[in-house]
Length: 271
Length: 256
Image (tube, rainbow over all chains, first blue to last red):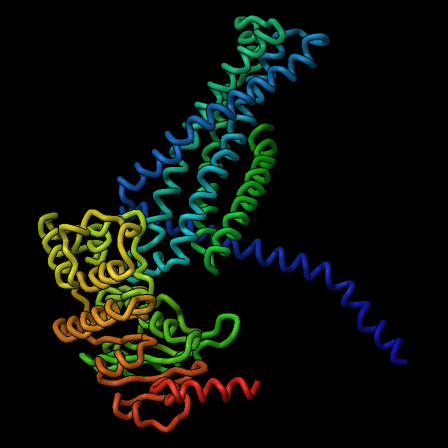
C-alpha cells in the first residue's frame, strides 16, 4: 500500500520537473526582457530631457571606438584572409575564379564584419562595462550616486549606450574595408587572383541593400551590447565574487543574444 | 523629524521586522546593534536606497514611499549620506567627488569659482588641506582621508539631515576619535538632524542625545545614553561593558 502511494506521488513530479525548468527559464527571460526594456526607456527619457553629458558620450566613444581599432583591424584582417584562402581552395578548381571576390565581399559585409566586430566588442567593452558598474554597485558608489540625487542611468548608462550606437557602425565600416582589403591580398597571394578580377566578382552580385543589411546589424548590435552590459552591471550583488560571476553571465548573455539576433536578420531583411 | 513606521524588509530572510521610532529635528541619534541586524538597511530606507517591503518612512511629515518620485528626490536633496567605506567615485579626483555633493541644478547654475570656493571651504571644515588633496584620486588617499572626503561630499550640499553609516569602522583609535569629534562638531554647527549607525558604543553614547538598539530586526532599546548605560537587558549590557559581552557570548555558545 505504502509503495503504491510513493509511485502515485512521485510520477507527477517527474512529469512536472521539466516544465518547472522551462517555467524558470521563461521567468528569467521575461524578467530580463522587462528590465532591458525599462533601461532602454530610461535612456531615451534621459536623452530627450538633455540629462546626458556630451563629454561623457565623447569619452565613451573614444574608449569604444578609437581604442578598439587595433583589435578590430586584426580580427577583420584574419577574417578576410581565412575566407579568401578557404574560398579559393573550394572555388578555384570548380567555378569561375571571380566568384572568390563575390564570396569574400558578401561574407564580410553581410556576416563576418558585423558579427566578429560585435563579438570583439563584447569581450573588450561589454565585459569592461559590466565589471566597472558591478564594482561600483558592490562598493556602494551607485548608492552614493543615488544619494546625491543623480540618476545612474543618465550619468553612467546612457553615455555608454549612445556611444555603442555611434561607434559600432563606424567600426563595422572599418572592419568591412580592412577585411575586403585583406581578402584581396590573400586572393592574390594564394590563388593568384588579380585585384580587378576580384572586384569584378564583387560587383557582379553586389546589391546596395547588402550594405544597409550589414549596417542595420551594426546598429542593433551596437545598441544591445552596452544595454545588456549596463543592465547586468547594475544588477550585480555579492562582492568581488559577484562581480566575476555577473561579468561571466553578461558575456554569455550578450553572445547568445547576438547570435539569436543575427539568425533573425536573414528572414527579416534578406527575403 | 524622521519617523520610521512599522518598517519591514527581507532579503533571503527577514532583516527588519516592524521597526518604528521617531528622530526629532536637530537631534543626534545613535543606532547600535550586532552585525547583520539591519542598521544600515534601516538607514538606507530613509532616502530610498532600500525600499521597505512594508511600512513607511516620513521625513518632516512627508511620506518617502507614498509621495512618488518627487518625495524621494526631495528627501535626497535635503540629506547627506556618509557611507561605511566612503564610496568615493574611483575615476574622479577629490575636487570632483566633493563637487558632486552639490545638487545637480544648483551646480549647473553655480559659477566655477564659487563651486571651487565651496569645495575648498568644506575640505578645510573636515580638517583636510585642500592644496594637498584636491587633485588626488581616491586610491591615493589613506582610509581616514577617504572618510573625510566622504563627509565633505555629504555636507557640501548643505543638508538638513546627516546619515552616518559606520563612519569610524576600520579606523585606528586616533582617527576614530578625530572623526567622532568631527561628526559632533558638524552636527552641532550645521544644526542638522543626525542618525549615526555605529559599533563604537562609547563614542555614540558620548555624542548623541538618544540611542536605540536593533536586535534580530526589531527595536530592543530606545532611550537616552544614561538609560542605556543603566539598562538591565543582558543584550544591551553586552554592548555597555566587555565583561557582560563575554557573559552573553558564553550564553549564546551554551545554547548552541
